[in-house]
Image 1 (cartoon, one colour):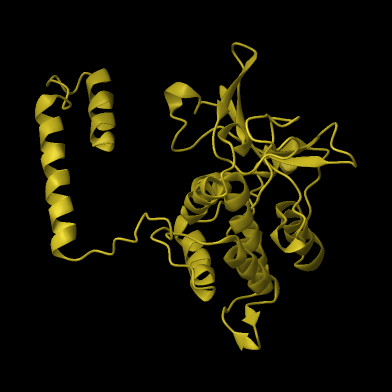
Image 2: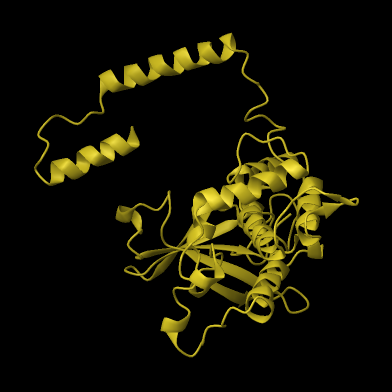
Length: 300
């Protein structure tokens, strides 16, 4: 219905549709009737009730097995569980860990460019601590009217993990070294913006580094990896968002320490905070107390 209403709005603005807006009491009643019918159909066909339940997703142990499997070329216990070149397996690991640690949607990693990445030195964290930050300005939840025109910037972050297999920072370094030092892709000239501003973090092919990976390709690499470690999930690309939110809730992580995404509005030159589940914040982890650096979460 959202797509149809968006089409109606475009037609109304262009003066092509003079009918009343489709939303109203009649549509609301129709949708409610359809929900009742769908619920009855699910019960009649004995649909799996575990879908969207507490076990719909993966555990942190399965996430570790998945990343280790991708690092070993798809081999586990002497058996070939995944097939593919090291290049695509390493890319899948980075994709998985970015979706996992930052609780992103698939389109966020597909559209991510090198210019959208940066690091932030976090103070008061003992030894040198760098946060990996990804900036997004377009996406499902960022319509054009609310910032999809690059007026609003959303920031998502993650830190190094104590387990190198689950570390998104290490996965990014591994991927870039593989691309530029081993597989022969010409490294961009960071002195010229036109050389790297449109280079994708996860391109479909290294020969087309400015072209994003397709959603089908992304799904077709993540799905076998999830199946190889016996992950039972109703989602594929969104399994990471769903699983991380569930894990944070089960571990009773306080909502104000789960994570903060920052939104920067250029026009008003101010920062607005939005609190969301984006991983477990480090620093002060006592219940009810905020961490010392609320801008960046840590993956669990």
